[in-house]
Image (cartoon, rainbow, N blue to C red; front, side, top):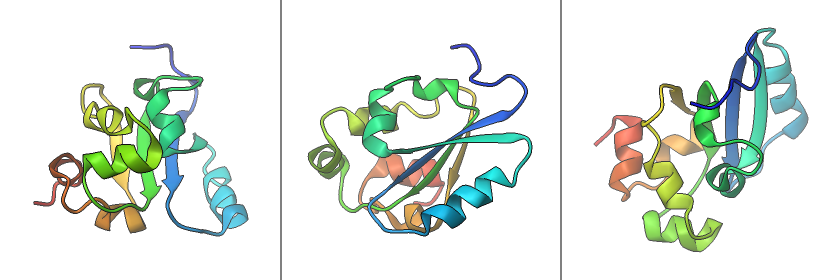
Length: 118
């Protein structure tokens, strides 16, 4: 397991992409939590672990939108993105799906498994 990003706070990878949203309000939301440090990033940055490996975060919060299968994910976001998502669950960390993420990739079995929805 990598070193914690911030041992005094909960580190949250906020995975975004695929839809527009109110950026200032979203930032204010996460800034309002005193015990949380949010690291917004699109899914391609998250999957390539630029700067920090996915398992270094305490929580993975998905606020992205997408359609299709793992092949579609790689075609849209770059090779290796689906593999990074499929590796989720190997480290002890929370996974939260918000809003559009709940209805994303409805034909991708791994995404359904992360959601806990068949």
